Length: 347
Image (tube, rainbow, N blue to C red):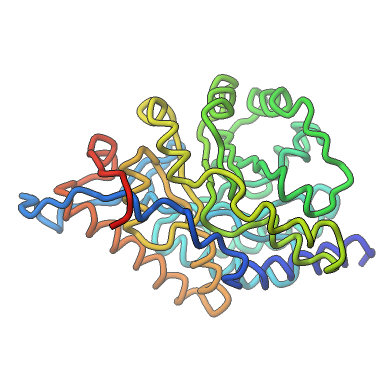
């Protein structure tokens, strides 16, 4: 294995270790506590009639929850992704895979997903690649990743702050929107765009929907702080390590993003992730217009054990979301789009 691949393995192992540490989580200013769902003391519905079934990207799914992209392409990810995949298929969740960047240069890296696709045939997957790869690779090369995965969609992740703190030597994002548009035009599956934890504002979502992007996951502040994780991997005397605290509260929370996009949520597929820690948070996101809700770190913790733990965690999220719907007098997730919420100071 080359030095570059050894470095890649080391970085991914560090990502997992640090992402599981609460010191790398954005545990304040998430905004979920300011959103109050309106309780219906007389819901006038049968709990048994409440359904979480949704249609995403043309596919029927048992839940609006999905596995938010986490990790891939290294030795430690094989067990984690197998556990996530088995649980996602069992519970009818969509699963976003970790970055497939390594597959662009190492054909052996695709083995991980070939094995999972073969052993978990009912699984619905989303391919995933960074915007810098979209800028530097041909659409044909990127779309090979989708074919190899038999994915129903392609995620392009935006991560400028993380790339800086990763000490990436190529930080030229010029022409990114045009590159995404070119890929969208050639793709045989829907293209989605997401941030990695710092939010997407209205100007960017407008541009993305104008070029044909199918869904945008705002992925706001509130979950794992990927710039801090990259900084913690650096020498303590480095400019990256010393600068991490200056960006501790950088970006928009998921709630902030959803509030800003209120004139888009009825007409476009806005998804949400970032700091969602229970199914009530999910209900709040959906009441603010999110059509799907991504979960990452809580599932990663469970995936370090086994698929049963992941499945249990997924059932908890779904139970909490279903109970929130019932207590709001709502039978279907899409009805949440038309429910009012209270927003204001905590307390």
